[in-house]
Image (cartoon, rainbow, N blue to C red; front, side, top):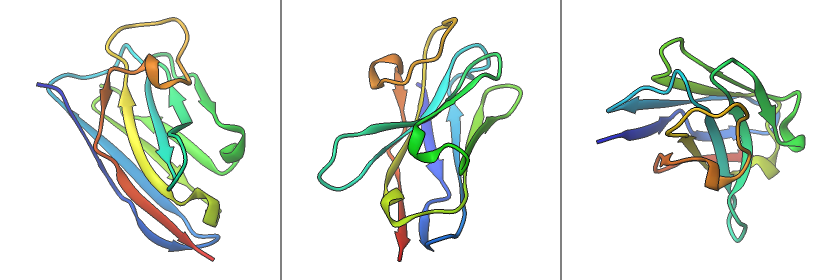
Amino acid sequence: QVQLVESGGGLVQAGGSLRLSCAASGRTFSSTAMGWFRQAPGKEREFVAAINWNGDTDYHNSVKGRFTISRNYVGSTWYLQMNSLKPEDTAVYYCAAAAFWSERMSTSEGGYDYWGQGTQVTVSS
C-alpha cells in the first residue's frame, strides 16, 4: 500500500521560511512526477509546484522565486522549501505523486494518483 506523509508545516511570521517534506512508502517515484498542492479556507485546491523524473520543475506564478521543489535521487522523498512567506500562503499543503511516467509533468490534480493527508501552514502578518 502506497502512503505519502507530509511534515514540516507550522506557524511562521510573514517573511519567514518553512521546509515541507513528503515521505513515500510502498513504492518510489524516481521515474514519475511529484508535486505540491495547497488549499486555503473557502478555496479550491490549487497547484503549487511539481518536479518531473528528469528534474524539470514548474511553479505557480504566485510562488515563483520564493518556493523551491526538490527530491532525493531514489524518489522516496521530496521537499518544498518556502521562503519569503506571505499571509496568502496560508493553507493546507498536500504532496502528490503520479503513478506512471509521462514526458511532461501535470499541474492539475488529475495528473496525480497518490496524495498525502496534508500539513497546515499558517503565515501570520
